[in-house]
Amino acid sequence: MNIDIIDLTDPAYVDLNVVQLAMVRVAQTKKNKILVEADSNVRKLLFHLLENDNARSYIRTREEENIRKRAQAEVETVREDLLHQLAYEELGSEGNEFGPYRYPENPNYNLTTAQRFLVVRNYYMEVVGDSATRLAMFGADTLARSYLGEFYQTLYDLLASYVR
Image (cartoon, helix red, strand yellow):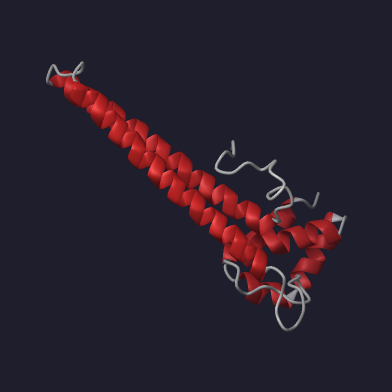
């Protein structure tokens, strides 16, 4: 996926954590969907005008411009929302009264289940090098069962797929 909703080489975005990168990917997906839908609407407009012998009219130019402006406004809304989410997550990622958020010592329950999945997966991928030991440790992790919910089995299956 080509990410262009924000410039990841910008010093403000170079050190994004896993959760923040997931937010960027979701926003990029939304942006891509908006632009594809706009292109589809432009094509529909062209076909409609061709059917009525008006393809070279001012209506086409004006309506295409309106479609593109609406799409850009939607993209800008998604971008602004992403920037707010990143800023808010940065504030919330510092921790709570029990200290900084870090799985498994002080897990962040403000994350979505998908974000929790990424945090736990990264924890096990970084902490344990051997895939069989990683799977055994994850299988014995009772916190992960409640913390991940329905994603527990998915992560278990993923870690099991690394065992040869």
